[in-house]
Image 1 (tube, rainbow, N blue to C red):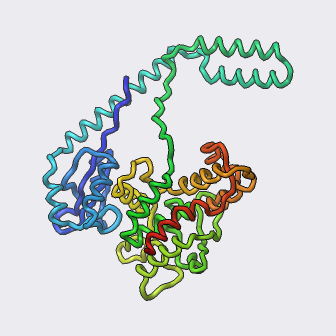
Image 2 (image 1 turned 135 degrees about the horizontal axis):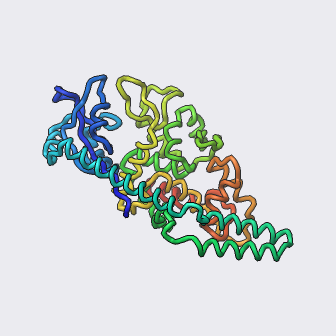
Image 3 (image 1 turned 90 degrees about the vertical axis):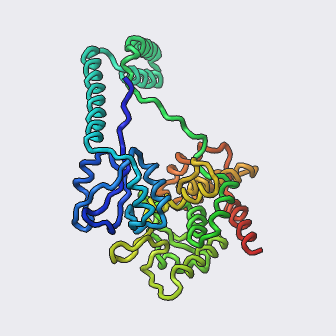
Length: 387
């Protein structure tokens, strides 16, 4: 029996008895419970519209009504947004509850069938037992006990033949993409598209230059950019990575300085965020969240016509490394040990083995070439801007 797809809905919520109140566009798999728990400034809300959809549809609506965004998932009650919500087909809570109950019943039936099969074949050898025997055979082979190793391998193969195929409950593997990084040509297109906004240009250029994660963008402050005019930036890393000062390409320095002058034309303090997010209910602006960074990169990539596979902030981080590796692979007589520490420094990895595990399988030949790809990509964009 195929696994059922969990139903999901995109909703438009507004404070009860307040037609001019802000509207929340959200996504949930349990609308009745969501409507019961959701509050705005302590007041209950109700759904003014609901439609089947998942996170992708929610994101599309956030982009569509972005001109009315107030912060997070709340939007101003503009007529076009209210009209869209009221134009949706009416879906009653009874219909939604019935669909949720049907999904749960299907899940219970699958679970019950799995229990019956496990009980029916209780005591039968499992596949992982044959794997353990094969590991044991390897140890015996290393110890020079060849006859015992042969007998163990024979026993493992018999166990594999004895286990019926219907006992395999492994989920089908999703197709893997060929690459997870942005190419040089795609990066040029993305940077060209970002030139229309000082924020977008600084964001893309800096994320690529120092291989920033999306969650690291909002941690940067003006204090970290104290020596930006000298080509230095203090990068704050997460996930146990090492923070530190990194060299910044002149074109990236120019883009970031243009953004700082645009965002903070007068008063500046060292605590201010380099990439501030929206102010929320009078509180000081915090740094851009990783969700905001992800939406910004996706919006730019889609506007530039780039494929969905690179429409993610991490494609810039992977691209930073892969461009170095690709340039290094084209250089003969490379010295491999000098490359790994360089990459580990830029990525902030605590151990060079982490860098090797993540990236060394992508290319066959590598060499330490400092800044070659940066000069070739960011430098060309800088020359085009100067013309």
